[in-house]
Length: 126
Image (cartoon, rainbow, N blue to C red; front, side):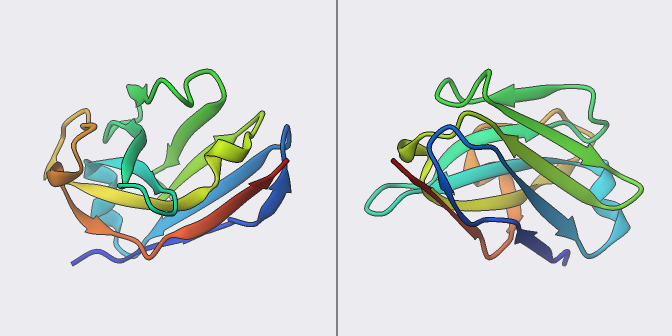
């Protein structure tokens, strides 16, 4: 079972940029799509971004499209989420997740992910 560890979350001001990182414990994570999800207090976990196993395709929620960029470095087993123009409504715990099945482009459906990190808190103050 792969272990995922997120880091980089912190308190920032509206308009700031922040980069958070997910590190996978084993190299086979490079053959799976990887996603970022977030959960704000009192709300359900929601899809944020996903990158295909090869890094060739990405998808974003409408709320972050144009501001966030997902990327991966398979040589380092890492997946990053670059967040620009942060807003208070981006405040949440951010989780990375590994897709259930190899060699696909990824999904917005959290049920299609079977490994999750513990999350990293991002707080955006106004």
